Structure formats: structure tokens, C-alpha cells
Image (cartoon, rainbow, N blue to C red; front, side):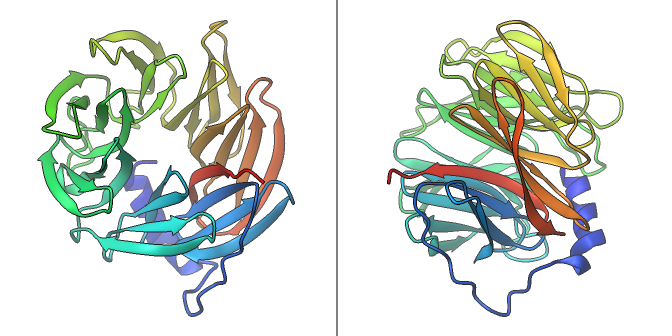
Length: 338
């Protein structure tokens, strides 16, 4: 979801938040498969226990305007964009669901997303057109100027891929780029690839296909998905998916893209067939695990939902009510061996 939509929603619905921060919640210890849902407006994390079909609501208090959650082993990292406050990164111990560490980022930098190479973390700072580089203990070791309003970021095959959306102060867009940091654990070599309008995020298939989602400008230019060869850094395929999709994931030889207005857009790479699943207004963030796809439905004033779909036949297996006015956004599935 783009910043101008996101900021507008914050202004309109901040008075409707369904959670307060007066009391620290008690985080439950959950074993087995569970889903972490980052609530952008209520600034909390809710946990859905898939085994017991139980939602633990607002059990973790985040920083200001959380935007991303990322797993490394038994830890999860939350990126708090800090709209109207201080941006930060929080570390959650997934065995106890407690925050064990927090670091602050520069005020007004609007950190967007995080990824990790073998030994370093990389965080996009959209408003500063930079990527911050941290060691494995989240000590800042370097920063790199990257394009214009960088957002999504992934690590694959010893390279960091960064989506530079090209967003300008007047909410129009320059040419979108994907920047690539090769050898990121030493002295990164920077390369760039011009793409379509407003690249926002990535998905990688088990076969090594790197897909970048280009949302469009919410006006004339609409959505595209481009495949980038991770070795040559050439665009080897493209799909005009239409709409204005904001997030992407990959499962079972299919690309899934969430569209705020149109629902869930699906493209079957094996058959070339495209499908639209109406999910209602507010389709937000995606996560794929095994043969399931998880989608949050964002609302600042009405009920928020978590949808769990079969990645093969697109059946909605579960629709979990998350609460009113939560602003359900980033999602993470963690499956712990019992």
C-alpha cells in the first residue's frame, strides 16, 4: 500500500483505534504453527494459533506505525516507520513472543522493510533514499544512497535486491529501478535495472526466479510483474497484471498479488491462466507457506481479517476476524516443531 493512501488513512482513522497502550499485554507462549499479524494503526501484533484456531489479540506492543515483519531463525524483526514519532526496529523472541531488543532509526527516515544476508541486515529508509547496513547484532556499520524512495528489499544468491519506487514529493513517479548490491557482506558492488512504474516488492520462486512487482501510479500506469535473471540482471519476462497491486508472493508455481481495490490477483505460470479472487476492499499484505497463502484485509474503521487460502485451488479455508480499526498489514507465518 502506498504512502499517500497509508498516511491519509492514518489521519482519518487514528481516533478510531481499538487498542490503547496503557497496559502491557501478556504475550502467550504458543507452540506449533502460528501467524503473526502486524496491526499498523493500533500499533500491535496479534497472533493466530492455527492449531487451536484461536486469535490472541494485541499481545505485542510495537513502535510507531509498524510496517514490516521479517523472520531469522527463532527471531522476528519489526520495522516501525515512525510516522509522527521515532522509527525503530524491534526484535521478538518467537519462543516467548517477547520483545528482547529495540534500536532507533533517524527521525523522519520512514524505514520500510528489512532483509538479511549471511552476516548483515539491510533496511530501506524511504524518506532518506538510503539503505542502512547493520551487523548481526543490529550495530550500524554503513549506509548507502539508493535511488528514490526505496521500499521492498530481499536477499538472494549473495545479492541484495532493492525496489526504488521513484516516488516524488508531488506523489508522481520517476522511472522505477531495481538496485542490486552484489557481495553485500564485504564491499557491495551496486548495479541498477530500469523497470516499470513504482516497483514495491519482490518474490522468489524455489527455482530461482526473481519477480518484482511494479504497482503503477494509481492513475494512468497500472500493474506489472517482471522477472529478473539474478545472474545476468536482465529482465527475461513480463506480465501486465493490471490494477494497482501492492504486495506479491509465490506459491505452487503461481504468483499472488494483493490489490487494494480489486482483491487477490493470481497468475498460474504453468498454464498462463489468471484469476481474480474478490476479497473486499483493503487487500493488503501477503505471505506464502507450504501450500497456503495468507492475506490481511486492512481497515481503519471496520473489521479487519486474515484470509487463509489453498494455494492450489484458491479456496478460502479460513477467515479470521482480527478486530475493528486495526489496520492489519504485514504478516508472518512461523511453524515450530512440536
